[in-house]
Amino acid sequence: MENRSLVTIANYSKEKILYLLEMAHEFEKHPNRKILDGKVVATLFFEPSTRTRLSFETAAGRLGARVIGFADPKVTSGTKGETLKDTIMMVSNYADIIVMRHYLEGAAQYASEVAPVPIVNAGDGANQHPSQTMLDLYSIQKTQGTLDNLNIFLVGDLKYGRTVHSLLTAMRHFNPTFHFIAPDELAMPESYKTYCRQNGIRFVETKEFNADVLSDADIIYMTRVQRERFTDLMEYERVKDCYLLKEDMLFRARANMKILHPLPRVNEIEYSIDDTRHAYYFQQARGGLFARQALICDALGITLEDIKNDKTIIL
Ligand code: CP
Image 1 (cartoon, rainbow, N blue to C red):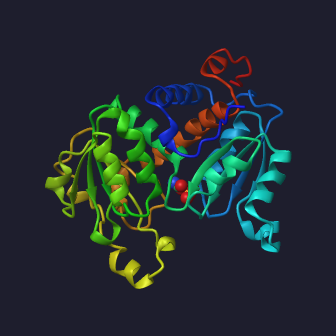
Image 2 (cartoon, protein in one colour):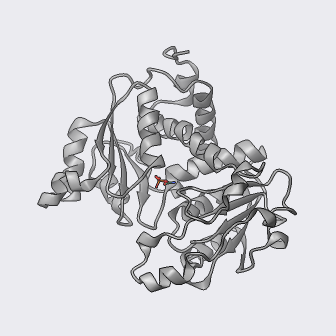
């Protein structure tokens, strides 16, 4: 049987990405339907989340599915010693699809190998966050009118930042030029730079972060320095304020430059930027609803044509 899990965005072709984005646009036009009536979506969150869990649950609910799951593993039988495999096997008895966030890199891959139902990776450690990438691409396409030939600046925690790892992987299809802006301690891992070289992705590494450097950007993708990923908290203290985007750094920015952030934000984007034409992070998170509706439907075998012909729309 075809494995319809989404573990890494690397498995998606350009055509598949564009197809899912078109599906997301259909859902933005009509997000309320009954196309998943009778289905059960499980959300298993072994790590904290606001946006990812709530947008997946809203996505399922607005399509008529029921949602089961947990937001805190402390309330599960994992505390009694139940393994991840047994948890996945149990939940597969109840749900048609499992959305899972886990603190271990590779947990989603493992779950997809043991589960009889599709697994959607909602973030595995510092590895990948493919559903975030789909909403990032949705935002980029909507604001820039294309995914092709863009200057994308990734700023902050490029070492542990699973969202930047996934975004970089997906963008190989679209001829981007990346600027990696990070301190040495949080630099883009060598494995991803190798990936860029192997896939013909241009990149520039710099520690400079000022109006001049940012004037070329189509997208500035800010990230939070993630305290929870550090084993040495002294190192976290040294780098936590490494790059703070201030409004007065945007005076040379391109008119259509947009600032994205997977959120949550701590202090890396000055609040006054929220009211500028460049801020797009809240709209970006809204798009997560439609992107995740597309991902759930695709994992359940529902096609774009099914959605275009859907008669269950609730106006
Ligand atoms: N972007 C993101 O993954 O946010 P949450 O951690 O709140 O889900």
